[in-house]
Image (cartoon, rainbow, N blue to C red; front, side, top):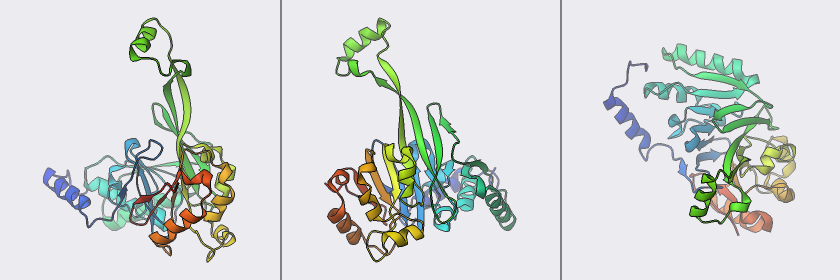
Amino acid sequence: MGRFGKVSRTLASILKRILRSPKSRYVGRMPRLADIDLEATSIGGIETCIQLPPLDLAFDIGRCPRGAENRSRIFLTHTHMDHASGLAYHASLRDLLGRPPPTYFVPRDNLADLELLLATYRRLDRSDIPCVFVACGPGDQLVLGKNRTVHPFRSPHRIFCQGYAVHARKKKLRSEFVGLPDQELRRLRMEGVEIQEERHEIEVAFSGDATIDVVELHADVRQAKLLILECTFIDMDMNPGSARARGHVHLHDIIERADLFENQHILLTHFSMRYGEGKIVDTLRRLLPKNLRGRLSALLADGRVVGPFD
């Protein structure tokens, strides 16, 4: 039941049209990266929300950009405003649309304050704003579905922050049967031959805000098929030491550790708003080493993805 009672079909239709309007803040519909569909916005200090529509989740909520109201599960990395300020609005909007209450997976250290924040908004808004908080942290395994779990990990930052990795168990054709005709595979199955095997893979890892230590500390980060990694600074106006002091990654940190990345694809996000599109693209083209050029892209301020750079 929404704050105005059950939302009528007419009102729900109007709200949906507004949310789809070009005047709504843009969230990029991105190309598939490492077989994963994303919708994302990320600008350092402004807003970060990384949506995985097929999994009905988002990493961070930003200011609740367009489309985020469709995600029922939000995995919050930390409580800086550009990552978390839209939390109450997200819950309120879903309530207004008659959607089920969202679930927020949040760092344990932040649970009490976030519950207090929602309680304050409920008093101010004179409404229920229903939602569910789940406190979590490194070492937990959060069940996402029959074959998926989400694993939080520590992300070194100025305040407590944790990233998330999505693990999946999938049935794959055994290597000795790859390339056989479908008719032959059907015959083997009918004869009781087990032609598939279960494999474990890390589909995606999201760093949240972090220093480059997050790559060195966690195998999930290095081995995820898709790594979504912040890269706030890219030039020497803010050198790597200064970036580290602020709790962020510098492009030179990535270049110096290029051999550590086992990922199929890397998406760099969270560029400082001091950098324009031309600066970002030119710098990456000039500086990226060969072993990263063909599997690295960058998320720009307007939601577009550029790269790879081979």
